[in-house]
Image (cartoon, rainbow, N blue to C red; front, top):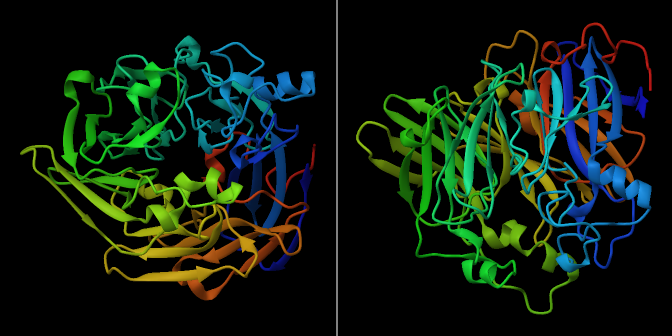
Length: 471
């Protein structure tokens, strides 16, 4: 569906591009218990050009989506359901017994929208103007179909390359690779680990990629018993691996740090001989289960920010001497941090992150962290209104890191509605400069991406917000 939404305020004339958001939307009844991460992937696009705006949303037509639509029933169990309920053979879906709904992250690479799944699945391609599903990434036959790609591939706006990793229960347990903007697989190598791991994210610098081996993973004894039980091992260090972007296994260097789990890294950059990486250090990676928890508390225990206490932390690795350092940058609890995409892999000062509702996977506001001064601006949403991951959109001709706009989609449970909000990034806490009323309520949470118009194939010749509607 595409529409010209109602706008309160003024759409900035120097905002040119699109905000993409991946969401989960259940179409069929769960087998037993529905988990909010079980829904089918749907991408929302809010496109801006010349002071105008349009909104479009479409389901990602994954193999699993099409199979269940044909069967008109759930074929895969959800996260909170026993795997034995699966109606499909092992290895189809998300290379296991969960459906690959491609509902986790969204990036724009090679002019197309690319969606991913949190448990190493296929990458699905969508048009950056119509959101038509174009099929799965093939990389001219080199896509690693046996293992897939993890949730958060990283795109370097300066080179057009996309870096990724994957993981599995078979040795070497991880691989790393690079794809150029023409879908050529430039590099793919083994990343040997001591055993199966659950790495969720990675980071890049101008010349390196940064991987991780955190001590929260499936208990090896449980794997041998055919079960899935995630544990935190506080006596095992966190390891961060640095590899040249186009390097091989022998070039990989590991650095040891305090044990923790990092769900999301923010950014990394080079500073002389040092590789510097920022992310959300969890003080308590494995919270004790609550007594008599609600179903919502039980399913989101491992994502409860008030229990895990994530805060921005900095890890430093000297590539010449092997020295390492780490320290907190703030004691403020936040997660889902984003930087200006032009600074991805380069030094950054500002981080735009989400604050969370206690005991729930809901974002009740945002923080702009100034990592140079230690100051931060807080923006709280109205009661009953929850946000999604914010993206920073540089204005056309921008000259500074925070010279642009912060964009998010909200979910208002009071009025069963959603808006896209635009904030001035340099006056973050002053309130939105524009409110865009969307036609239907959008599910809360999860990942987003800002793409400048010129990086989207067909942006100038097809629709954009100023062109014809063609749905």
